[in-house]
Amino acid sequence: MNGALLLTPTLSPQAGRGSKHSPRAASARRERDPRPREADGSRPFVVAIDGPAASGKGTLARRLADRFGFAHLDTGALYRATAFLVLDPGGDPADPATAEAAARRIDRQLLADPRLRGEAVAAAASTVAAIPAVRRALLELQRNFAAHPPAPAKGAVLDGRDIGSVVCPAADVKLFITASAAERARRRAEELRQEGAAAIFEDVLQDMKERDARDTERRAAPLIAAPDAVVIDTTTLDADAVFERAYGFIARALKEKEWKQ
Ligand code: C5P
Image (cartoon, rainbow, N blue to C red; front, side, top):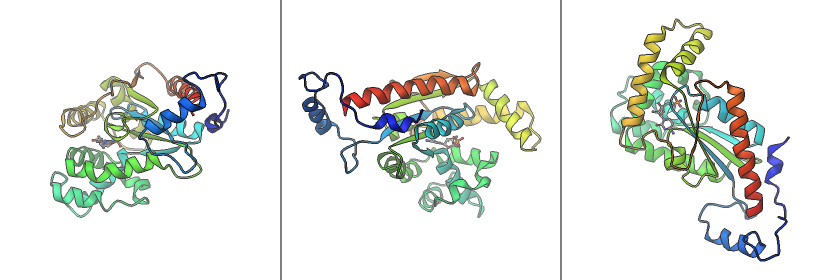
């Protein structure tokens, strides 16, 4: 099924009966809703996916965006790119002025650079991510992507740590994807081995726990499940089972939104 088709506005069975689904009620709701709209009055459908490192949220976000024809933004790449621009010339990721200047220099091409995927960059990313000026510099960019996903996408999937709580608090669907630290470390070690790197499970687990601690204990936008997020624990689920569950939530929310157009 092409999920993007679900966005086509349809008349609900209640239309014109003066119910909460009537065109007049829908139009009043539209006027009250402060979220950005496209020129035709429609509002992009936003899916916020948060979770700790190696929880499977990145793969899930890409698959969902693909299936629904939505645009995808891996917001972790923004923090990784910032860290890379600091580390490359030998800078200190903990220095706020250097990190903020780097965040303002990110370009689209750098986001796809394979050098962002390394463990050193990941660790430095969680250091720059704790600096409020860096988060401020990246906030507008993320909100702008959600409000105006690149055409022809009629929706956006953003994955990160604070999407449901800070970046897109009014997202249509919020998912929080998690798994035990040991399972996430096992997956990450496996990934590293497949890339040809020597990975010792205990070292990967230790790095993972340190990064989790930096991400959950920082004062600026810590990793947290928004109160209205659906939590999916993937410790004993495979990627397909997680996808099916998430797909179901989004398909239902899209149907619901059609009624509200
Ligand atoms: O998701 P990924 O592992 O690529 O993220 C790298 C780091 O960027 C995270 O450990 C976290 O510190 C930071 N991050 C963040 N907020 C986001 C996305 C990532 O603080 N929305």
